[in-house]
Length: 331
Image (cartoon, rainbow, N blue to C red; front, side):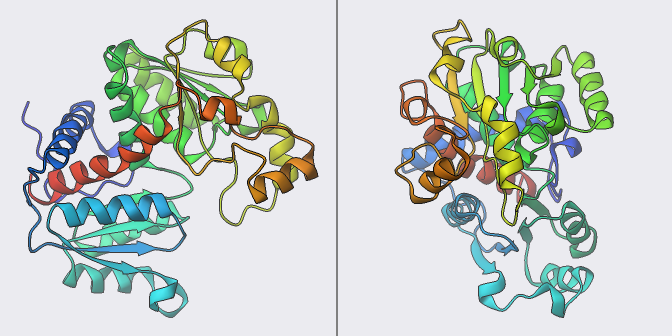
């Protein structure tokens, strides 16, 4: 099957077919190897890309910039520090203006609706670098990492996500898993489960593609046999419900006993970063004292263990984004 993504926006993985996701995942290791070999082909020369940041994300910023520069594109960072203020101009007007100057727009913000409005009015590809609802570039990087670090095909993998099941990372992984036949378990307190219509949709897609999506609360059952245990930050910018979140999510932190409960000595840890994994960190120590927890998200022993592939995963954000840029701008 010929896959052609030229001119396409990617705001969620819902917009991509299984074949299109697999196509991007084939590009990731090829582009990664070309860079390492010093044989990068600059396919995006003379392209101009705007990176519109309405929230901070060092990982997304770095990955987008390096991916674009490696491929020869010019990049402009637009955000509050560069004079961009949403209160001064409508999304529709900003999108129409930027679409006249740039070949593509990377958007990082809170609102999925804003990303969709940019795509509607800019007339150039728009990429969702991160919103509260969806994190497609992270999911692509996660899938590429799983392929890199396992000899199993994706449709034979068991993946457990622990933590906030409503998070953008959990939701994007669920969509990806449902399209690729992965056995995904979202292990989360019930108050943090994804909404029922979303769960019904991804479980139906998973059945059609030979996979399985399960949402459950029991950690031991959820991680049994897992090839990968994934988690993500418990807090997002501007979240003020820290006490409530810590109280509910603390039992779902990834400790050594959780890794042992998989009964799989080859289980790997994944975390989308940034991670609070050690109490010596100033903020981590303050949270530990305030809420009386010894571990948040993941304990330091697991984070620094041989099972951790967190920084392989973080590195793969860049070639995953590069694959998206190449596929949508030049094919």
